[in-house]
Image 1: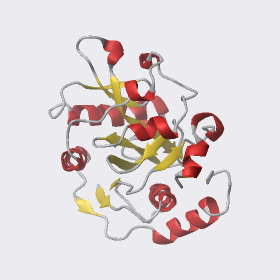
Image 2 (image 1 turned 90 degrees about the vertical axis):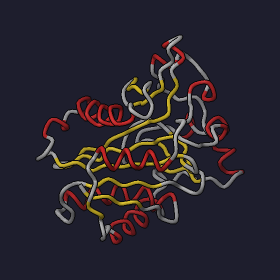
Image 3 (image 1 turned 45 degrees about the vertical axis):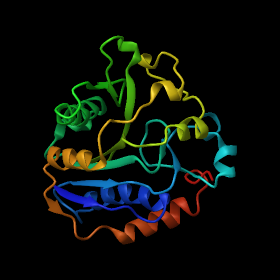
Image 4 (image 1 turned 180 degrees about the horizontal axis):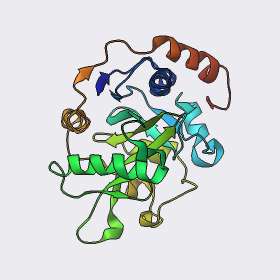
Length: 246
């Protein structure tokens, strides 16, 4: 698998690059899959494809602080990207992994791999809900805290699976910029963002090493789909209010 560590200049470009990597695989321009790692230097709110900005985002706070609110190509819930939140994306080929056409199996496969890989570093890591990774608490299972939210996009021959890994994030930003999610997993038990979400007690370097090893991403991707990124930014994020809320 290829490996691409690349953060572009704007939130829109970074979201576009994940989508462009999927499209490039579909078009036969890249083969063998890719793991991309990036981390936004600025805060941005990222909605799932069908999430409601009016319900899930504190739009006034975003306006006042000049924080972009964008919609990604995949489903899932709303997240805040920024310093201390490692973002990853993996594109997989259905020829190699035909079972991943089923959404539930795709979640189980990718998050199962991540859980297994992180366990030597953090023994209390587990999958929870539909697509969360959590730190379990020995005393009370209802006190488990989320550190990773994930989402996917399926096309004809490939899968894009991407998500967040919080390790040194200012968690106050989540309470400040987001409202209560419209869909909540049972294990959240009505807790506020501050009670429910946590950082992993490890470094970005450790997380990157785990991800690269997990996906055997040993080949550097030397040419990424620049033209596709530009096209997506211009046609979607620069021109369509559905995708760029603020």
